Amino acid sequence: MIDTELLRKPATILIVEDDDASRNGLFEYLNLKGYKVFETDCLKSAFEIFSSTDSGKFTDKIDIIITDLKLPDGTGLDILKAIKEGKIQNADVIVATGYSSVKTAVEAIKLGAYDYITKPVNLEELDLIIKRIISNKSLIDELNILKTRLDEKFNFGNLITSSPKMTAIVDTAIAVSGTNSTVLIEGESGTGKELLANIIVNNSLRKNKPFIKVNCAALSETILESELFGHEKGAYTGADSLYKGRFEMADGGTIFLDEIGEISLKTQSKILRVLQEKEFERVGGSKTIKIDIRIIAASQDIEKKVSKGEFRQDLYYRLNVINLRLIPLRERKEDIPFLIRRFLDDFSSENGKNVTGITKETLDFLLNYDYPGNVRELKNIIEYMTAVSKGGMADESLLPGYLKEKTGSEIKLSGLKSDTFISDVDDFIKIPFGTTLEDAENIIIQKTLEINRFNKAKTANDLKIGLKTIYRKLEKF
Image 1 (cartoon, rainbow, N blue to C red):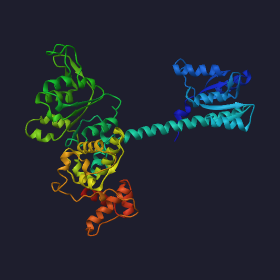
Image 2: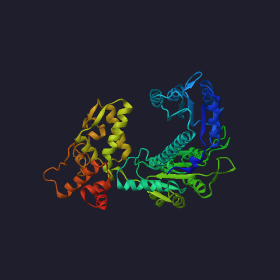
Image 3: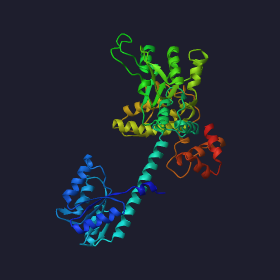
Image 4: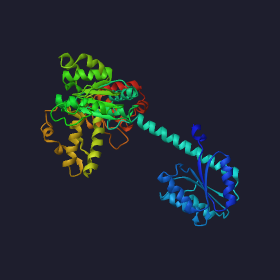
């Protein structure tokens, strides 16, 4: 549906015509129709108007140009060429001339003219062309707005997953992104807590406001307190000037407190006040500073610290309004082939390497490794393999040293094979002789999912099974 507000907005039209009677007639007609009209009698003056528009002296953007083909100092085709070459702003051009010919009409259209009319100008025909231009502009604007909204809504950044459980977590993150509720993201190191925080902010009402990140574990208690709350000049030795802390810098936006479980009880009490009262004082200061922020916190396992008395229970409850617990990579191994492909592409491009893939044996090993460092560890492994590779297929010889020692019996195989995830370039699925019925079913479902780019509904339809069965099988995998 076309936005009627856009249709009601008057278009700005420039008439370039050297015949006074024709120019004045068009000016009066279009002015009466409610359009904002400017007029000139030569090419030089037209370009001066565009120059003034680009510099800000002429505030109205020209939407439509009606130009005579023959002008005292050039032709209407010169305007089309200038637009095509980017010398003047883009506008829809209607060429009008009494020297009608197929050749000039085709040339004008090739150069980008919207339409071509002959003199004497049929005013009703001209009005219809102008309305069609405005209608098309409105539709394009609406499509662009819709595309932008969709891009923002489904902006997953660098978090790659096809796991139903992880997808559900991302869906929840997007659903709560439009609120001001405090979010606590929990998960092992390397599972993507900061990436999930980025998704929340990128889809929130505060996305164009400050987004400040603090790694609480990387700073000592004294430095962290000053970094979070700022300090007044002379607050302590070395405080030579006033310093605004991260909370103050994040005013109006969002602050991400990573590894919040590592902060001291003293700092915890100050953060609790910020959550409750939205206020604080700088270190060494007495002035109360009011702020409007949203807090997203992250921790590996904060509940254990609460049970040990190392973290305030009241602060935990304040932080844990919305809890998002990320799944370790060892529990979503269906993501490994896709992550490997993404990392191979990224690091090959970044380092000027042409690593086309990894061997089946190497993939089998990577599918069965437990990844104590999660996605971050897998990323580091692929970066190392890409860096030391000479190109082509990467094999086990390129694995980091600490993994080469585990390529034997130390790895407890989970039964996962590369065939489960990566389909051959055939129109059939290969199932080795002796495969159990259950394993064969798993292979068929997994390979059909891969062929369908993990479109679960299509896979269920192709295999004539219920969608719930697909989700149940994926969870079991």
